[in-house]
Image (tube, one colour):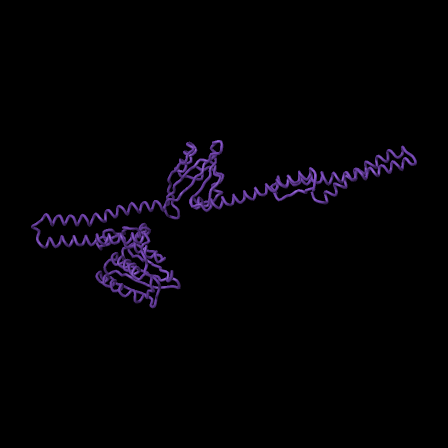
Length: 459
């Protein structure tokens, strides 16, 4: 209640009291005479003053604090925990006002803490790397986080308030939820979704929400993206299978021809020379394979130490260009080089030469005779850009994401015939990443491919 209303109320009390005393005077005075009338009038005035003082005292010490307390209580009910009541310096009203103010402060602190905790929980949930969904005991969705929306699309309003099986169509998720409610234990399942054209694998974990009296109140679903783990697992399986196959082939050849030579004592010199040549070729291939495996292992374990120097591109590429021209001329390929003069940057010259030669040899190997290969070297303010292009067989769309994996070949027969180990591009990628650079590829089937390498000038 504001000050004006309090004053009006006080005046109303005074008016009521004055009216009572006037009425008493009107009734009593006619019944008296002379000095008695003066005495009665004086007594009424003194009584009115005393009563007025008492009313003011009661108003200030009881009515006003109680009304203030009622107003503050109404504000607290509305959720305004900033409201405070008037506090008298003494008496029961002081205790009441103090108690209400303490209650208001406690409610305000609790609200602040709840908001902070709610904000913290919201921040934690929205920054989780896993999708989260909260379902009540009836199956209605109450909460989802930002990662969940990224995984499944749509907005929170499309999920919250709906039954989980109406907004999630996957039967595996339905089974996980049903088993979680049925057994009241953690249940898991796996689903596959296509996001932005790429296949992603998710592990769905359902956990029951149980209160203190062991009543089931709902379930929490957590969606873990295990795509990278799946890919690593597939790469590991492929690697083991490929290593076994790649080692088995030359070893079988070497053993077979060696046994033939030992068993056939009458073999003429021409056959012996042919067999020994095959054994030498296969042993050389086996040696290259083991060398590349050791090289790749060393790089992946971060044991590769770069010998960084200032590279002058014109001088650095001289020996590489000679080797490339020799290999290109053997297949009657047209070799075009476009190298911007006076480019210099910091890097490991031997390792980066390995990158250029590997990419150029791949371009030569996968380009038919009378085709063309290109080497371009350019720069911008921050990077050196190396492009290797060919007019070869090209790379299928499904293979572009895998060509940098160990032992992956676009054309296995052609790669083996040229002595490739299937590890070259994997090594190339690791060397470039060690220089904090990037490598990308564009290709069109039957028209050729272009590998683009970007190396920072300083890192």
